[in-house]
Image (tube, rainbow, N blue to C red; front, side):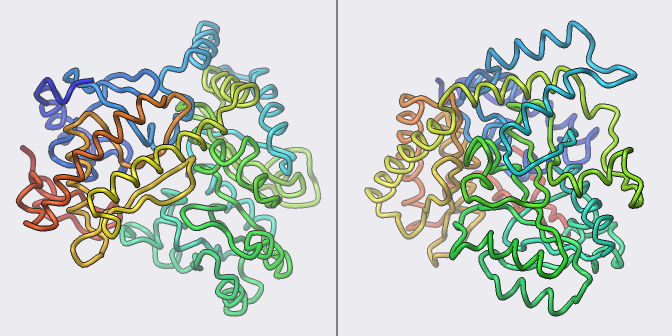
Length: 449
């Protein structure tokens, strides 16, 4: 593993071309140049396990793993072999593939409370399908989503609640209301404010804060008492918290739930699952209710992607994937926090979340979250061969990888300490990274080397 043994020449060239051809320079806002330091690789060319190589040949240990979509590791052999086998047989036909049944059976064998499942390509399709289904089932229009969870969909019903609401009709935005996590009284107040209008409540089962006082079960009861559905967004928690999702861990059966990301180890597969009574409205064999246009995607059941999903779920069933994620996460947290203490930075750098899906926060001299200090920490770990937008481990992260990571964090924190004393602008090259949800761009955000 080198410390940027090659300059970013090819990456810089690609960035210039990408900016002129692709809005945002890439196809996922979280991967954009504005989310990373200027001294960061612009493009990743390949990966193996938890290691990646950028377009200029520099090697890094990666965390976040494709925005948490790669739970086993990049180019994991069993998954690649399954996908390749199906690609040789064709990937998309005029009628369904037998793999659609096989994948559904495999998935439903893991998710206890789900009776039917519909596969699609991304998380937004799944969550928006759940919202449409809830509205169709209840005959209501209003959706309540958790304000403490950052992203549910690219579609208007959610994006209209963010600062990036340009292009979303106000009439649509007004049909989504928000509540705070672990605040049952706040959710109850929403039902009181919108009597017989809320179709569904949607939230992640857990993010940083654990559910308290049986919160998820109590919220489910509140929804049902008011004629609404409970939707759990398990895009992140699914295949990290438990093989059966966080719903299994917390013994809760939602009306609908959505999965994706690690479901197919980076291949494009997401899922909407739930009770048959609700899911059937998207089908063709019911006659008592109006049909719901649920999910209908030309590429929603590509055979190679479903084969990857089946193989991924089988690896989770036969190998201790979840146990490894928890073990490595605990080890990384313990070692990193020891380094943080040694540098006297416990009030400024904090590691948060469950061991299987760690995050970190960077604070300034006043103890407030700081994009500048976060960017500095990213910059300095990247210099030392680690890309860590989060600290989410994979099945491929070894003890040696963790040791190298903690060594990189140690070096980066020595710079962080100096920046607190002497000013972050002295050590940060270029502009800080930006939050994704912002109403307008600022000219300095596009600054390049």
